[in-house]
Length: 282
Image 1 (tube, rainbow, N blue to C red):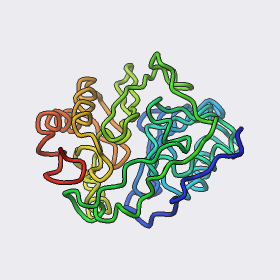
Image 2: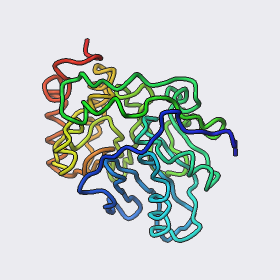
Image 3: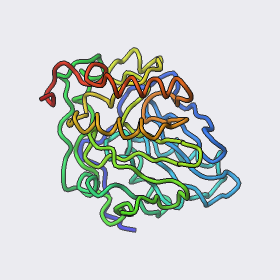
Image 4: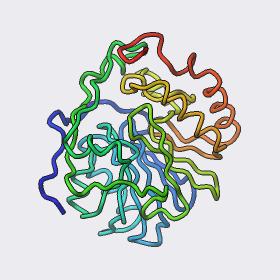
């Protein structure tokens, strides 16, 4: 393990929460989601197999202790994953990754286009507080956007679409919210781990985030810089006809609510998702 890993220089605790924080649930026998403040992480693996599991995303900054406690409850003490998979590198998805890699000494995998933001080489564009939306969008300048540095502990995902440690799953490139954003899909039961390609809460509205009002929305507006690709990514995911979707923000969605909501989002993305104004609107 490389000991020169470090968080971004602007890394800090972000004082936002929701009614679902520290609440989770089983999506399937081998898939569990858990909310860290306002963002979801996933654990893939049978709880009876102590060291045969994978962590997807690593929550908000300063959340390592919460994640380690969750893992102990789910898989037992001294359990460690086979790998950590990142849907992308935004601050609320890599918040505990350096601490967890140091604790477990396990590899991290991400899309090739996301690696510059995970190895200290490139900062994300600054969050857009001018974008159409609610109070969270206005707060977004306090969110970290500088890169973390995982050094040699982060690797490129296999080019054949397989996901290390997740048999039966494949990764799908879903850019727009970030250049190397991915989602994960299991064809057998049509389970989808979305990341932030779309979400099930209006993430720019503080009230809706606090109460977790469920509705299918496009990716968080204040950090999305390529709306054309974001729309194409939603089309790609809708075409999979998922039966259940775990998003990075909001509660999991299933059945007709999911299928109808996704179809409407694809058809009316320009109205529902794309802001009327903002720094990254063409």
